[in-house]
Length: 193
Image (cartoon, rainbow, N blue to C red; front, side, top):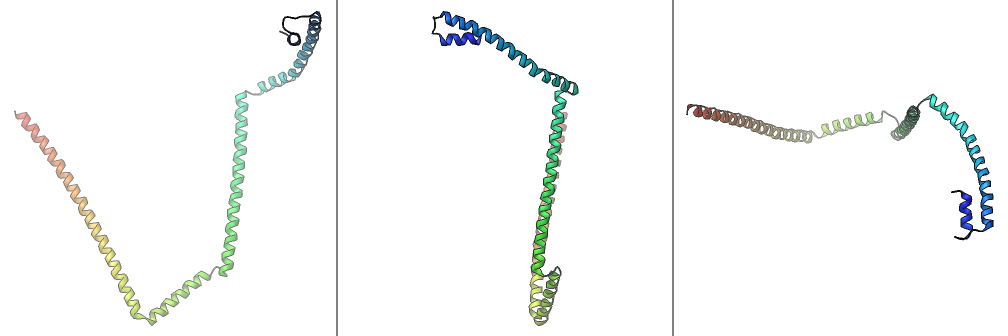
C-alpha cells in the first residue's frame, strides 16, 4: 500500500470516495513514484562510497582481527595509564616521605641527636648505679629470680609435653600390637577347627 493512498483514506471518511479524492490519489501516486525514484537514487549514491570502503576494509582484514587489534590497542593504552598513575603515586609517596623526614630533622636538630640521647641515658644509669649499688643488686636478683621462675615453668611444660607424647606413642604401639596379636590368634584358632 502506498503512502498517498493511506493519506487519501484518512482524509476522506470511510465508504466515501469522491472524484476529487481519486484524482488527488492518482496525482499523489505519480508524485510519490517520482519521489521514490529520487530517494532510491540518492540512497544508491550515498551507499556506493560506503560499499567501496567496506570492500576495502574487508580486504584489509577480518572484523575479528580488527576487533582484536582494537582491544589490544585499548589494553596497551590502559596499561600505559596504569603505569603513569603508579609513577605519580610513587612520586607523591616519596615526596611526602621527604617532607616528613625534613620535619623530623628540623625538630631533632640533626640526625646524630638520637645517638647522643642514648649515650646520655647510659651515663645517667652509670651514675645511678654508682650512687645506689644496693638497689642495682636487688634489681639484678629480682630479674634473675623472675627469669629462673620462667625457665622452670618452661622446663615443666616441656617435660609434661614430652611425657604426654611418649605415653601416647607407647599406647598406640601397644594397641596396634594387641589388635594384630588378637587377629593372628583368631586366625590360628579358626584354622585349627
